[in-house]
Image 1: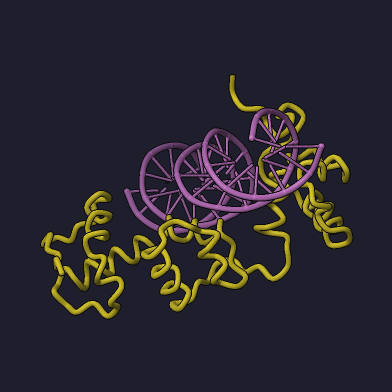
Image 2: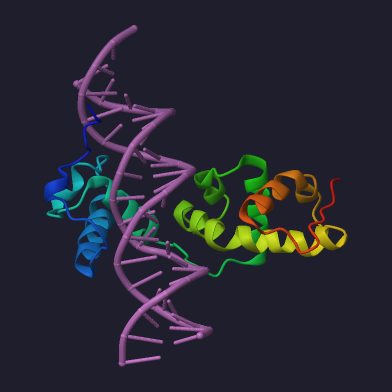
Length: 162
DNA sequence: AACCCGTTCAACCGCCATTAA
DNA sequence: CTTAATGGCGGTTGAACGGGT
């Protein structure tokens, strides 16, 4: 026996949200709040969506003051230092970056930032240049494992072990 | 023009934590 | 205290897109 589903999968719509659905959800929450129950909310406002889907849509796209894309160098630095110290705790990392969502940061890290950082590592440590950031320098072994696993080893294959 | 392939990111899935009954 | 319902989170997927051939 599996776990009971949170909603009736057969009668619930999946996939991208339409502008109409967005408008329905946004205007209701702006006027009434979430009512403390995401599961009951879609039925109440006539949306054929899972409550969890509504929650995700609101938190990641519809709520006010959200920024997408255009991560600054300072944001890169904050994400990297937090990732090194606490790992993939995206909600905690997002809490340090106003206007950013955990989903956006997770996507940014997985698709861009970790590659960018690995490249930076190869270009600095791999050529024996001094790494400018001490916390990162202390985690060379960690990065080495990542870079090795992903096949991002520098042509020389050399890493500083300090 | 048609296809391939890598990248991006919105959204889903399933698990664990928390809360209510 | 126990159990069920709901919230929250991180991992993962797959459609859309764009550049290259």
